Length: 262
Image 1 (cartoon, rainbow, N blue to C red):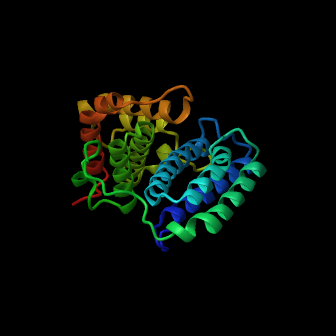
Image 2 (cartoon, one colour):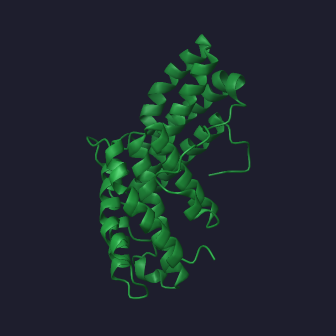
């Protein structure tokens, strides 16, 4: 997603929605379901969590402004948001919802809050200590920041998805660093899904994982999968808290193995 323009709330939502629409179109072209456990389904779940988080930021900003017309505009946005995050709607319906949402943002919301920056200042790094990932890659730092922010805001499903994503990314970084990335790709050159990435990481002879990391990886996958794919599951604070010690060790070890920091 684009990072060159000012990171306002409305720009953030627009970028996420555009990416959702793009993923939906590519998935349709490849005849893949957005509700399935595949690359496009996982990407859609990740973007959906990001959009829900950004939507809450928008609600909070509109509430602070207190303008009745803005509150009405948010209500008008509701059906379009629901269509965009529904993996089962036809792609042309999703694209139409995107256009309608863009129009409402531009004509009714941006004139009043267009300069409002997204996101509050994150005051905790309980989930993933930022000192561990600082100086690695910008995209890794941002995912860690989002995981911490979601936890602080009480958005525990979104937090679990961000945890899932950072572990997935770091495993890939390890294989790429050791120049053995082909071992975690399918016949089409696509990286494995997290389950197979973890299996490959646990079996790889190029390194020896610590006991705590071996124990933590399956648990991290399980809660990430439930939060991303199970429509009846809602993560809570205790679910994330149980992961914290093992997650910290895992992230630190994978950062070391991937040689992302000197």
